[in-house]
Length: 306
Image 1 (cartoon, rainbow, N blue to C red):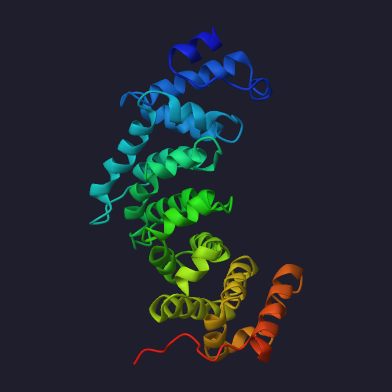
Image 2: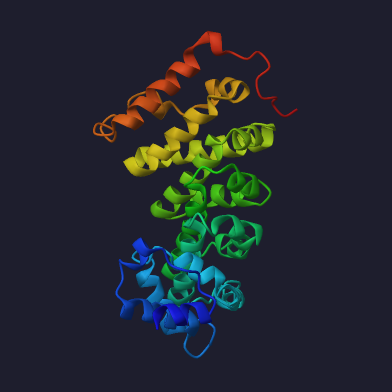
């Protein structure tokens, strides 16, 4: 019955090792919930149940992607929320519901069989209106954080296809704004996304290509260091330091950083915060070496504005 239902409804064949993780009855429930996403009357309950199961059903992403009408239903959930984000009238219930839909899209973004198609369909662009929001209320913060999680899932794999796609969108300024004014957790995910873009050669070249791009990134990172000096977070500082270290790999950015690196990264302000974080201490030490080594100088530098 399980395999018949799956084949009739257009679900992909499950790998034996994946299927063995769930009983036949459990998989029947999964199939039913996926089918129920297509109906507005049953969608909310199905979203809730499937979002709970996304970690324990390895082939949920192909199921969602290949079953008829499912991705359209998830996008409908997202678009339905647009009218209440500006002006900001999002309720906790609305936020929870759309975040369950976003959690399923994150599942699709994370899976190697569906990630490329997810990008080719430009689905991340549907999430950007949520990243544009600035309301500090919990429903909006949860919405931004869950949306960032989808993009974070995309960049985790370090694939050039993902970075090339993101560079054609407004994700960098959106992340920078959240890095400046979001909650600590949202700042951490946004900084992680920027870090992953910088770690890609194309991403690093893009950000260091003009003074305006570099200076915007350097300004936000500098503001974050000043804020972290007052309210320290080793988790967030780790990503900030890694961004600085990666920028120092670019000759022109390195020259500019010699002039604008915050003193708090040089004077031991974060010694206590990093005492148990060997990797970040090592990155910070390498950053200082890169900025002090005269053999790494680039006389051109990043051109300053007139």
